[in-house]
Image 1 (cartoon, helix red, strand yellow):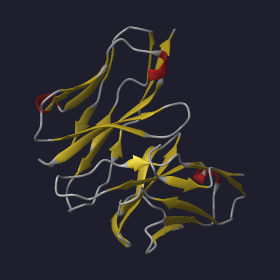
Image 2 (image 1 turned 135 degrees about the vertical axis):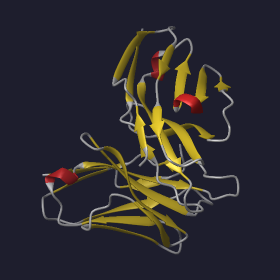
Image 3 (image 1 turned 90 degrees about the horizontal axis):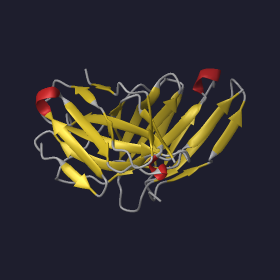
Image 4 (image 1 turned 45 degrees about the vertical axis):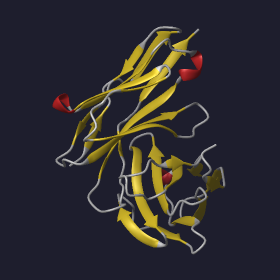
Length: 115
Length: 117
């Protein structure tokens, strides 16, 4: 168990809808990351938050947004959903230290199916 | 631009065989980090190892070993005496350390390893 909690595990919704994915990082971790895993694109970095602030951005669509709250949990909001958004969405967290980049610890993912 | 290539899409071996998963990376930075992650059939991503660009020492952890060679931009992973429980998709990943604490992992496409009894 990585200590990163993601809810829900599965989500089925229709095109055009909006969903929110939730992530609780490991205790003590200040950074939260979102990744998308799809068959055609593989694992793609979406966005990173550190202690409530956006730290790095990847290939995140404008229809997607994220935030990290004062209690450090994070939410990924996906709107105007399209069939191609169907994927496994991972949240990860890490602790920042002086020794270089810390490894990411991933949650079990939320499987989103858009019909 | 960063890139990670795992040329082996699928590997299938019989239990107890040794198997090596290849990883070749591209980066312009002198400071970077390499990782291996395992994704078992249950779907989660499990961290295996991190290596920074200044540490070319090979590492061994039980049946797992990693060979990092900057000269060939490779970071290969070997499983000795494979077991059925090693069956998973293995990902190699690269991160450049451009901004303090910012981390964008670039993943390879993964190698699906099947260990047959």
